Structure formats: structure tokens, C-alpha cells
Image 1 (cartoon, rainbow over the protein chains, first blue to last red):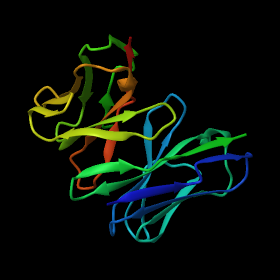
Image 2: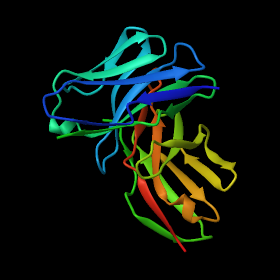
Image 3: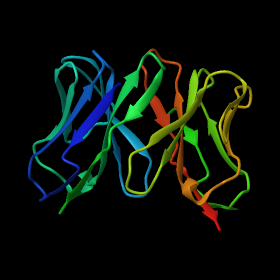
Image 4: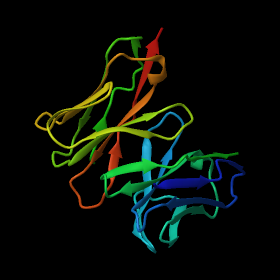
Length: 112
Length: 112
């Protein structure tokens, strides 16, 4: 069966510091992968999606970037965090067999 | 801008009653429709998806789709306190990419 992992689970970072969040998927190959952010009391905002290694599409201009160095690995990065980057970051993958999307456990980021 | 709209609630129903959650969408070419449940502090989990007009039942949950009215709903029968959560409606649009647009969610409270 397929499993999606995210780490770290929680993170507290100062403004201006760098960020690296990692997502990996097991049990499937070449999945579509997604990064979402959910700010406190807000809806899910799609940040990036990827259909394959090295292929990244950005949905919202911001100071974040994403990379997909391996088939089942998706990384969200920032060189300098802003207060507005605080939120719940969710990685998701598309199950083509069921034509549905599943989420990882998420990373809660607080920028102080 | 493709939109998915939900009443934010809270929707309060007594234990054992039927909870009715509603969602409208703007993209008339939308292909498939999803309901996710999100407990506070947790990631969304898929409850149901529906592609065709009509009803789809899974246990205590029924999804209803009316493409002509661009309306999708989720009925929860015999509501339990454990159903108290935020319910997210998501729509897969008419494009080729497997991307979902999410509503901001309806908070459901099941009272004893």
C-alpha cells in the first residue's frame, strides 16, 4: 500500500532563516505530487505541483520554491522566511488508480 | 478564477440527526468532486468522491451531485460526536492536470 511521509512534524523558525520541508511517497512510482499551505482559519492554497522529476509548476508567486530531486521525493524550500509563511504545510499525491488525492500528515511551521 | 464555495458554519446538529453539508462550484467543466474531513490540527482525510450526477452512498455518508446546478452535497446520517470536524469540498477542474480546488470548509458540531 502507499504511504506518504512528511518531516518535520513541527518547526519553529525565526524570520529570515531558511526552510526545507521534505515529503516522500512509498508504494507508487512517478506520482503527481503537491504542496499546499493552510494558514490559520483559512482554506487550502495550492503552492506547487509536480508531474515528474525536475518538473515543478508554481501556482502562487511567493518566496518559496519546490524541487523534486527523486521520483518520490518533493521538497519545499525558502531562503528567507517571512512571518506570513507560518501555517500548516501539506504534501499530497495523486492516486491514478483511484483518481483521488491523498494528503500526508503535514508540517506545522511557526515563524517568529 | 475557479471557485468552490462552502458555508463556513458552524453547523450544529444533535447526535443521531442528519447533517447536510453543501458546496457550489463555478467551473461548469469540472470532472470530479471530493469530500475531505479535517480534524483540528490534522491533515485532511478523504471521505468520498463522486463523478456522476445523482447519489453515491458509503456507510453513513451520501454524496449528491447536480452538475446542472453546479452543486454537490454531503449527507451524514446518524451523526456522532466523532463526526465533529471541518468538511472540505474539493473539485477537479476541466484542465488536464490532476489539480483540486478546495472550498474553505464547513465546521460541523455534533452535540450530545
